[in-house]
Image (cartoon, rainbow, N blue to C red):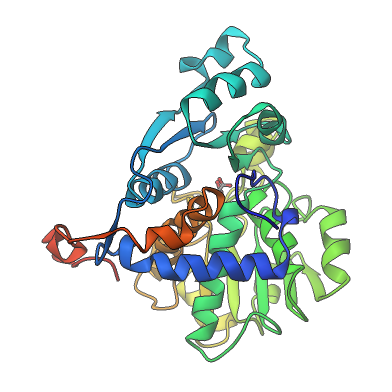
Length: 343
Ligand code: ASP
């Protein structure tokens, strides 16, 4: 696809070459993310971060990514503090905001809302999650992390095995990820969900066209013979009521002893986060925190690289970014924290 000036709404926009391009730009962003080099290529540019649903990682990492390229961030984080609460349409909001910004990142609870918003926008819009539908930047950073983790083991994404675990019905991160995996070859997928939270049929059908797909309702049975576990949270906010959501709370829990008993040695553990750490939930137990195969915080770090790449591509500053090197004044090693800088 041509990235320049375009919206990023769905992973369906990407060919495999586009994903490779995003990943190679993300790789080149690492020295800036590590503060080993500085670029001010987006000095004077403004991103509007419009988040009408809760978000921590996506909102802050898009903002950090823009700052690391030298740009400024404006944020709205609640419907009630925006004019949508006064009945303003997505069309009007888009027309107004695109007059104030060079690019917009938007999250909204309604599927299709970000696409509708983008049609009225005069600047590129990046989908930060539209209800249960899609979360393209999350899928890209997940795939980027998978590529890194597999590469460290001398493997590639083509031909690997992955277990997708938990709420596969409402999880937009997993929906976008499955669509992206459709660009690769011969993957073995275990779809592991409680009855009632299965992956939507049309996504399964699409996966089966290229890959070997097996579904499981029992957690332990789905953990064998894969390279990566991709664990997800029950998306309680998408259920018709809390009582309905409570039926699933704590049903699937992975902890160190289940991992040791059922997984291949060195199976990588991923999660789009947040993990639900309430005592009754715990789909990914804290006792895995010392397990070196737990990649969840490498995933979140990679989110900054991938989001820098998306901004650089859409705003057409990939090459220029490297021509604006400045002396380094701040470095992650200066954080003076006992755990040091970034891993
Ligand atoms: N943070 C991801 C999302 O926004 C996953 C989650 O919330 O469970 O979809």
